[in-house]
Length: 382
Ligand code: ATP
Ligand code: MG
Image (tube, rainbow, N blue to C red; front, top):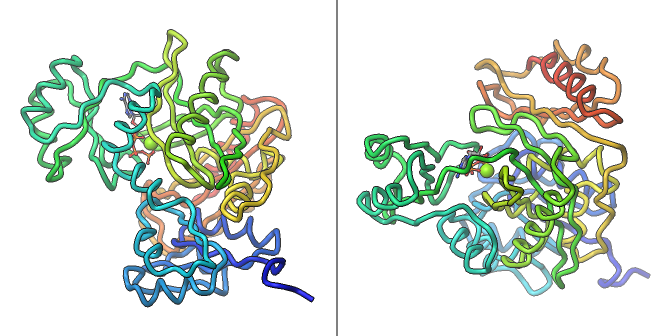
């Protein structure tokens, strides 16, 4: 006889985009039922029967959703975790905790918290007024990065200021009522990312160090392992692990880092969820970031995060036209590449620069994998 203690869990996901879709796939693989709740009909969630579109700020909607779930998680730091927390029954866990999300989703709060915990971050100042920002930029020396505190993604909330005039010009667009963040420009040798999966009690596993390659401030490709010295890689993993402990992250947390020429490592930012820079782990690692996220939020034992092969390379598939629906014309060619796995998210509208899918190549030689992955991604042409 099944008792409530050994019944298979039901995982609720606030969000219906590609991250929710891939979390759900990992859950389903282990026999965990999923429920998705999204405020608009997100394309990627269409593949699941229990996907619901409703006003997720409505306490009644959230109460009914949580009542059905053993645990709820989020695919985005913007999901209404605090509102769900207020109405969930004791039988429904919620990870990451709203307190963790609150520490991460405001870049000013996040950086202050990490700095206070003694973790290495670039020089920064949270500036309530334009004059404060001009003073901070003067002190750091131009150029500086200007960062919106909340709501930024894919570089949309950032601007580089080379002069005080640039800063004045960017201020009205980026500053909120409480201003913006001014950050010293980091002359990095590599941008890195490290995923950490952590259970409620603090047990964790740390993924290999990934080299993330941006184009137009957007992740274009990821190479694993990163081509950095072993002591730099070890430092990146140490710092990532410590950062996730510092915010009490539960589930998968991604840590974006800068590696500098002098061998030091600085934290750029944290994301309290599976991340684009960890997609390589689906085929590349013994346990993917999504599988370990699901295990962590259910407080189940974590799996081995190490690479299954010498290397893995991921390349994003971005929209290159405005149109609907996506087309499969290029897929047969894309699928010809050996050792390349193709992921199409199922977004109904193609838009230039929109993340529509990704491909991952796993094997021996990074350069050959990148060539194969680029060929596959380029062929797709949705
Ligand atoms: P995403 O959603 O892609 O993670 P975001 O909008 O939150 O991005 P950031 O990660 O803050 O933005 O910055 C985007 C990119 O801008 C970084 O990946 C990096 O290439 C560059 N960048 C950010 N901060 C700095 C800095 N202090 N010095 C130099 N480059 C920076
Ligand atoms: Mg970033």
